[in-house]
Image 1: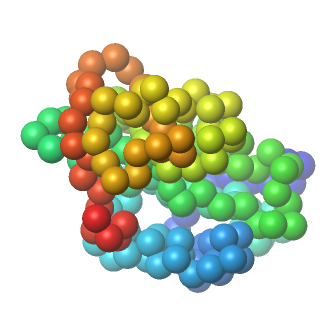
Image 2 (image 1 turned 90 degrees about the vertical axis):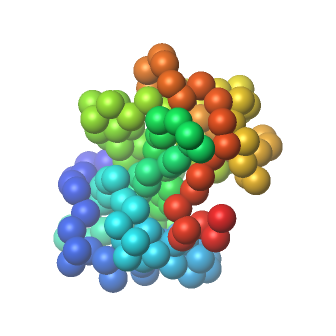
Length: 163
């Protein structure tokens, strides 16, 4: 992580973020999701990792509704340039983003991701168990940021996810 600086994303970063997501995931789907979330105003937080004035990492948090109850946040997509993966950039993005979500009072964060990666940050399938959504399974996890509502319910994803 030497020489890598984390900062809030700006509008000027959009093309680089789109290119990074497409490269990191090997398809344009995640870049489209980011663009659709931005267009709809469904972004709580975006943080980028920058090295030598080049964006090498990106994380996005969006509002997650729970039908009839207080909502939470969703994490994703999160991407790191394939050339610098496994260098700690993704971990730093997640820790920084979760810290900001915690400070802003978000009660719970959901993620659809690697079942061996996200548990390192406290995410678990068990924490998501009481919530209903089409993504349920071993890759759908949650991290309780504080005790209290929402404790269960049907999750409402932003339209960018085609839900």
